[in-house]
Figure 1 (cartoon, rainbow, N blue to C red):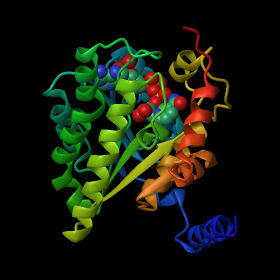
Figure 2: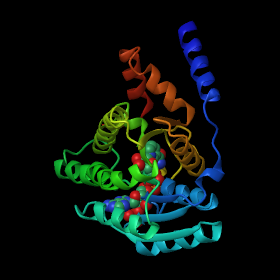
Figure 3: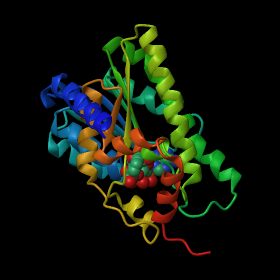
Figure 4: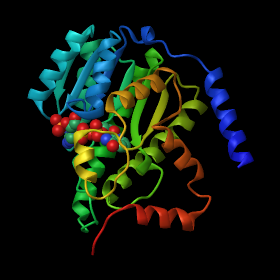
Length: 282
Ligand code: NDP
């Protein structure tokens, strides 16, 4: 307990002594946000808009993107454009980055946030779905990052990866999704090292989120687990803030940090707690 308390205090003190976030610093910044038609991505777009950024948003549904763009302009975005794309299509990742760089005349932030729909429940053995989801949730992130890196190098830019507690811990009922999030954490965590070792101008921020109250997430977990969901607009703000401060990691809400921290301390009890937290009838 003493060790845990001291470490927590040291970490909080470190955070306090770090740079402070200024919304003003994002004015005019050129930002590409994926998965921005709904949920957390939509909220990320609105926050950037309020801060006066120049935004390109993407997702599949054009009619929804149009509405989000309209709202971004109303909120104060210097520029707001959309491009409809399906990240299951191999060529769409690069096409979207090219569009954003051309329309914004460069890029400061690449916010990788989209996820493809995936069933929640005991895994049904559908290997094709795992492969498809890997393309949408992982391979397209890698493609977009590699395509954007040269432009980000020129602007001291940042890549923000929206990940999950399920990229750090194994839980039941979301196997394909969990696999894609672990892949993201592995790839972008390793990329952080290589960029730092090459003295690159680009930073990567990996965001670990817990349950957030988006429509899709609430619909999925209904009946399986009863835990508090935290607001999407606050999650979005924390994501933007962590990216602007060039943090390597961000955790929201608070329990995601502690769950990750103590994950391997008592594996037997951890697994019992996890398995007993879900409702499931054979
Ligand atoms: P949503 O399901 O609300 O939004 C997903 C977004 O991705 C939508 O804009 C959707 O738009 C887009 N999308 C879906 N399929 C594709 C595709 N094939 N190609 C391009 N875009 C696509 O998700 P959340 O807001 O809940 O989650 C956002 C991020 O936060 C994700 O990375 C998720 O893993 C992470 N997260 C969320 C948690 C939560 O509890 N909500 C918890 C932990 C992490 P369209 O349908 O128009 O394509």
